[in-house]
Length: 350
Image (cartoon, rainbow, N blue to C red; front, top):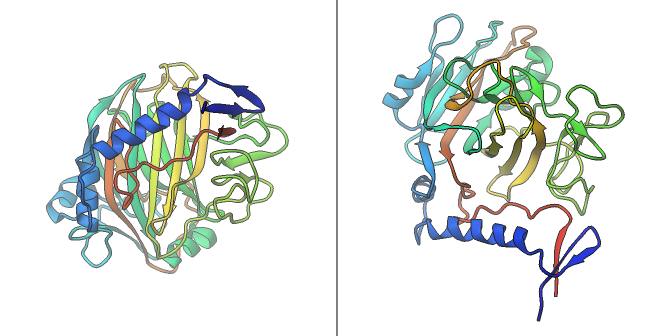
């Protein structure tokens, strides 16, 4: 029996490299994973012990939080250990976002070195878990109306520069989106998925799934600018952050040539232990030369760049299980399997 791979109607008997790469990555992840990870704590420890991990933070130590927390704009400390809300361990990192505060730096940040200097040609893999209250979502939609920063991966000299990848929750519905260089977003042409760079005409994708195929046969979230409706991860619609739900975020950042346009990002979400569903897929990203040529730091954030006005209700955001690696990171509770989608337009026939 021979294996044939059909790509866009072209049958190629020998082009099995993509499947081999997927199989090799999966096998490597499983091989480095302990035989048993029955509890959430064991599962997290197993992911931390996997090959390539350079940073593992359970965010359940008061001393670790105190050592890395940064104050809000008014000098108060709003980040703390919460032992009641967690995905594993003794607790999680909770930020309090206070009613009546209109400072963009409303809650401060947690900042730490990644444990490895990521240079041109390397790939950053980062995974974290996050939860918000219903009031967080309504405050952002109705009052803050801001791009609330969640995580910032950056070079040593500044958080706003060419060596920067930031993930935000955008105020018009609380969609996660990514950008680089202080705000250069990853909107793409809806027909080709080519990066817009401010020049797209016609339909635009704010989020991009693993393929551009629409529901029900697609995979991931394709969020159209002119039709921002909720999707289910099967091709059409947008991913909106749910309330009172732990969401696993997973990002892959390929660092291209300094000054060139060869960087790329892929990002996924997993809700309630479900499979990864892609929400960001962009290539041809410019690595601007207005800063560092490497990435060393990571921040868990609350900063609101365009905060419009103070909200009337105090609310909270939690972070847990932060991992940075040079290799793919397994999905929580998935026995070491990375479990990402195969390349778009790829199928196997016998």
